[in-house]
Length: 255
Image 1 (cartoon, one colour):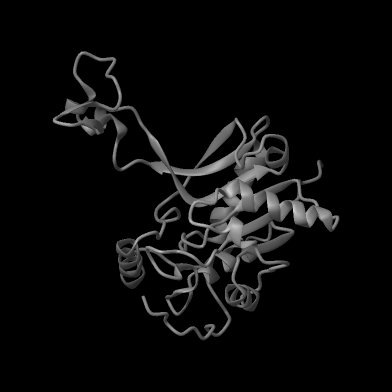
Image 2 (cartoon, helix red, strand yellow):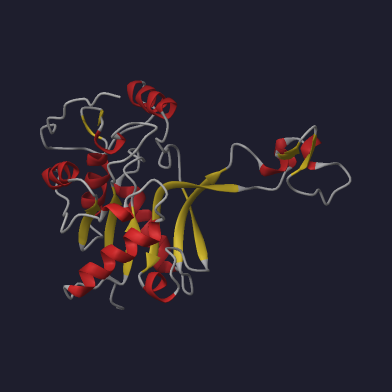
């Protein structure tokens, strides 16, 4: 039986979020938001290590409380609002490699998808390792805003974003008749570590889809998303990964 590749979970949790202040540690369902991603990663039992990448000592303490590793803090210059993922991923894998800690693959699990469970991660991992010749896997879902209905506006005129190959313009075509289009969500990515160092990206060139189900890919980015997530939880439409720890005591920060 071939040896399974090693994989590390990387959970990004910088402290500078603006639309929802300190969203990664904001209490949700009784615990800091990032606790659920840590719990799902640990419960999946596929990772050699679960590492939180943060620039905050406070965040690091919370991550360790819930069972994640924070071997070092992320440099501030790699934790800005416009900092691309490749920078902190390359830094993290490089620092670990300097300590003779190498992993064949890495998975980015963002704390803003709290309804992603261990079973979701295991399903994605099975699909990824079953494919040959791919560089990475990325979570996607059917788009809600279809690009065939989008426009480019210039002054008092506009034109369709996409040209229609058919006689009936796409912008006047029923949604059900349009080509199926998928949008990426932020819940899950898996890639071979080599793409980071050889190609300078987190995805490479050959990307396979991982189609999320239900609310697995729900992403909290704005205050409105937070309200929706709370309602999904309240009504039982979505469930959180189980946590056995007592809630970490967090004082709500002022906006």
